[in-house]
Image 1 (cartoon, rainbow, N blue to C red):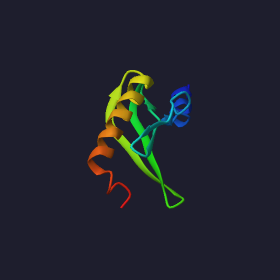
Image 2: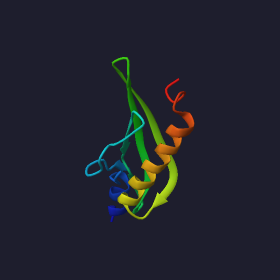
Image 3: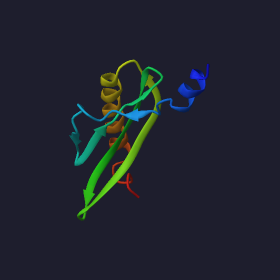
Image 4: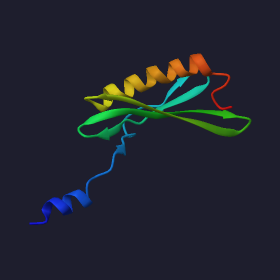
Amino acid sequence: MFNWLKNWLTAPTPDAISAGFAVVSYQGYDIHPEPLAEGGQYRINGHITQVIDGTEHSYALVRADMLPSAEQAAELMVAKAKRVIDEQSGRLFN
C-alpha cells in the first residue's frame, strides 16, 4: 500500500558516471568527462584540471544539455571543454 512512498523516499539521486571515459589532454589541461544519469538520459558534466606550481586546479563544467547515451554526453562534454579552454584558457582558474 505504501510502496509509492517507499519508492519516493529511496529514489536514486543523479550519479556521475566516470568509469570507462578516458581523460583527454588538451593544451596543458586534462578534461574529465563524467556524464550525470538523470531520468533515463545523461547530462553533460565533468571537470577541467591543470597543475599550476604543483597545485591542481579544477573547473567544474555542467551544462543543461541532455543526451540519450553516456557516450554522447561524454563526447559533447569534451568538445565543450575544449571550447571553454580556447576561450578562457588564461582566466580559467582566476
